[in-house]
Structure formats: structure tokens, C-alpha cells
Length: 267
Image 1 (cartoon, rainbow, N blue to C red):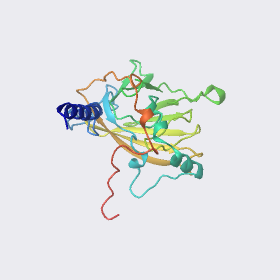
Image 2 (image 1 turned 180 degrees about the vertical axis):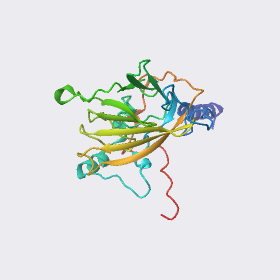
Image 3 (image 1 turned 90 degrees about the horizontal axis):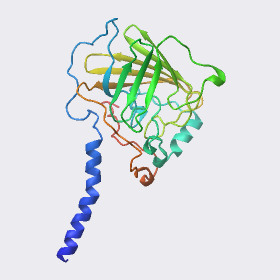
């Protein structure tokens, strides 16, 4: 083999490996980017006494498979339609892979921030991933719109209130476009999500989620996910649509991109 051909082969291999290396650097691991997880400590509180949930978080919702958040021994209670839709989905059709919003309760594997307006009437979740989208949670005591006034959207209409030390967010009014995770678990426009955010200490916040969708699931079911505080980080600019070439190359059925949760001993 000539020297020229050897150099060409080596260069081609390097170019094929480089995008994977860059992707690995840009995609945070489950423990986050670097070693910036908050140290354990007491729950920080706001002036009125509620836990302070503000700041940067990583995780707190499903990414690879919402089944990961189920209690041990439980399974997702699909209707026949829900199972059929989930099993038919292809990886290339994942809305998040196509730079569309993640929906609720799905979380992209990137940091996000909680903010509240000075008068406390609105809370916002700002997402670094995909399109720098946000969720708006009304904290002023209003109720959900009814009838035609409830316009179906990716993130739905969210109202929140405090129950002791737990932030409760009730959301309805979804369109049916989002997936719950990479494996394609579906929902309909009748989806109703209740999230209960509880800060356990300075480093962690648990999100207990109730899914109620009579079209896709036979009964309401619950999952739980933990978010990690990232006090030394800021949200970075990430423009999913810029030079996006991955979605057209995805092949095969929708599958998870992270290992399955470990099976408890004895099962």
C-alpha cells in the first residue's frame, strides 16, 4: 500500500471518529458536565419559608425511557392503541431529534433553570437543549381555561401552587406531538400531568409525576426522577437547528440511548 493511500486512510478514519468525540464532549453524562454538582447540605429556603428551587438543574424527568422512573415491579399500563403507537415509532421521527420541544415531563440531557418573577405570579423553566424553549407556570391562583379557550400546545397550560414544602404543577391542554422519551412512549391531547417537586437537600430535587391519559393508558400511573443542582453553571447557547444532520441518518425503531436501569437483586 502506498504512503499516500496510508495517509488517506488514516485521515478518513480520524474524520469519522472526530464527530463522535465532539458529540461526547457536548453531551453531558448523567452526572453532568464536569464536577459541578452541589455539595450536600440543608435545603435552602426563600424569605417566605418555601424551599428555594431556583437555579440550574440537570435531570428531573425522563430522557431515555420513562419506564426508568417506575417503582420496582411496575410496568406501563398501555391501552391497545398506546402499545401499538409506541411499538410502531421510528427513531428518525422523534420530535426532539428534529429540534422540536421535548414536551412534559420529558427532559433533554442538558441543564435547565428555574426562575420566578419578582411578584411571584409566574414561574419559568428555561431549557438549554434544542430550541432554548421554556415552560410558563402560572402561580397566581388562576385555573385552566376551558373549552376552545384551552389551546393545545407542546408544553400545555400549567398552574402551580405550594403544598407545604412541595411545588405542585398541574398541566393540561397538550397537543399530541411530543414523545415521553427516546423509545417513543406516546400521549394524546387528553394528557393530564401532575408534577410534585420536592427539594430534598442542597444537591437534589425529586420530581414525582402522575400521568393520566385514558387514550394511551388504562389508568393513571406514577414515575419519579431526581434532578441535581448545578450551582456553578450557566445555560449555554445551543442551536439545535444549526447544521443539523443527525435526524436524517437515524435508522430503525425508536430505542433508548442510555443503558437500562439495573434490575434489583432477586428479580
